[in-house]
Image 1 (cartoon, rainbow, N blue to C red):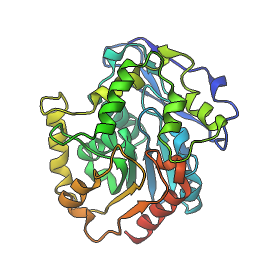
Image 2: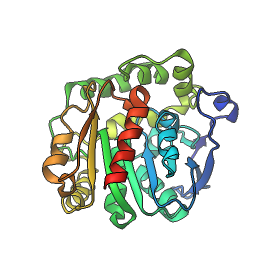
Image 3: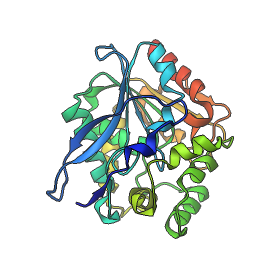
Amino acid sequence: MDRLRTPDERFANLPDFSYEPHFVDVTDPTGGAPLRMAYLDEGPQDAPETVLLLHGEPTWSFLYRKVMPVLLSAGYRVVVPALIGFGRSDKPSARSEISYARLVAWTSEALFDRLNLTNITLFGQDWGSLVGLRLVALAPERFSRIAIGNGGLPTGEEKISEAFLAWQEFSQTVPEMPIGAICGGGCAVRPSADVIAGYDAPFPDESYKEAARILPTLVPTRPDDPAHGDQIAAWDVLRSWHKPFLTCYSDKDPVTVGADKKFLREVPGTSGVRHTTIVGGGHFLQEDEGHQLGTVLVDFITHH
């Protein structure tokens, strides 16, 4: 598999983001050299709690820079991967090399086979929930808690929001994909220019954006989607999930509005948990209200 690697200098002097990257190799399913997957790993390695923060489309680990300090102050180990195709991780050169199943396989190989993470509290947003909840289905014994904000686990049978369909169409037709502007547009308050540049950093030109381009089309929107069977199997695991499960969606996200209802209705672990709304957050609630989100997660871990 041909791949690109963003030059290190693109990541210099990012605002409020001085964390050192770490790297693991994951398998090239076409038989080529391994791909390099980047992740942040902060806090005590022997901490009793490991918090796994998974980003979505088209962001990267930079999205969690406001959330991480709150979790680290509470004494947790915090692991923040960049999905293959994003951030400092390698970027396949062809869209055809990227699939939902491969994203799950690469991420599980990194987190389970290489890092051997256990006692995990997952927070997933956007594609971070699509990948993260599939990881839970693969190895539920590794997870202690789940928190989801502005995400879901669609099977292709749900009603799809008009906002998402518009985004899907835009992603496939815009001549040049303005990653930073997209991230800024998904916030309730537009970030500063240096923050927008931080979201643009992994993508020197259009050739680096194949994953960002293809992911909107990989969200299951029809029952005949290739991922449908795996999604149904993952929901079977969630319907027997009795460990704590928190929903913390924001109040200003038109893309995932109402997506929490299925979790609250069908996941037993949502019972007895104080679910919350992140006030003032757009789709990228981590950018708008990172400190508030971090505080909610600490409270969730402390009391459950």
